[in-house]
Image (cartoon, rainbow, N blue to C red; front, side, top):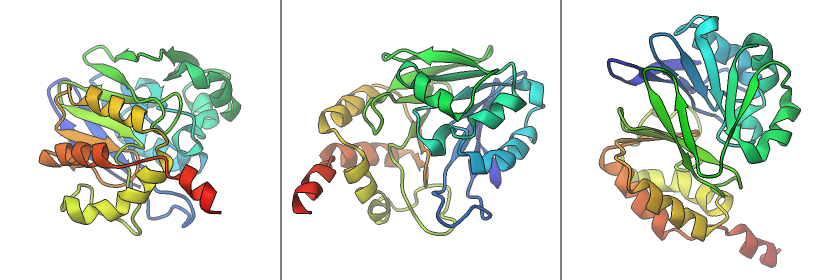
Length: 249
C-alpha cells in the first residue's frame, strides 16, 4: 500500500494511505487518511477488513501502536469501518468517533474494547492535544448519518464519498484536468447521492470554510481552484437518479 505525507505544519501532518496494487480486483479502492501529532495519531475512515494488515503496517511506519489513539468513521459502510473488529484488538484503549445514529450498526463489525464516542448531528470536534479537527455534518451524502473532517490550520476537508471518483488502475493523487475528471465521478454522484436538498445544504455550509484541499475517500484529491470548480459542478448536478431508474425498469 502506498503512503505519503500530503500536508504538514509545526504541530501535525496529514498522511494518505491507498492505491494498493495488491487489493482484489472487485474491491473498490479507498483512500485512508491519518493525522499525526507529536504524541498521537488518528486514522480517518480506516477501511475494510481486507485492508487491515496493510493499514496497520502503514500506520506503524508513522507512529508506535500506543500512540494510535483514535479512529474516525464518517458513516457505517463496510469500506469505511468493517476492519473495526481487528482494530478493536490492536487498540484496546482506543476511541472511535462515529455518528450516534450508526452505533448499533457499527458495533456489528466487532467492538469490545474501543470506546465509542458518538458524534451529534450538528458535528463537533476531535481534540488531539496540539490540534483540533472540526467535524462537519454531511447528512444524506450519501449516508443518513454522515460527517466530514475539516482542519482549519492546513485547510483540508476530508469529504468522504463527496468528490469520490472511480478510475481503473492507479490514478494520480491529484486532479490534474477538472473537465477530463468529470466522467470518473459524475454517475457516482448522481446515483449515490440521494438528495438535492441535502447536497445544497452541505455546499452552503462548506463554502464558508477556507478549503485548499478537498480529500475524498475514493479517487483523486482536489486542490486550489479545483475545490471551487467541484463545488460549482456539484451544485448544478441533479442527484438521486435511482428513483427515475426504477420507473424505467
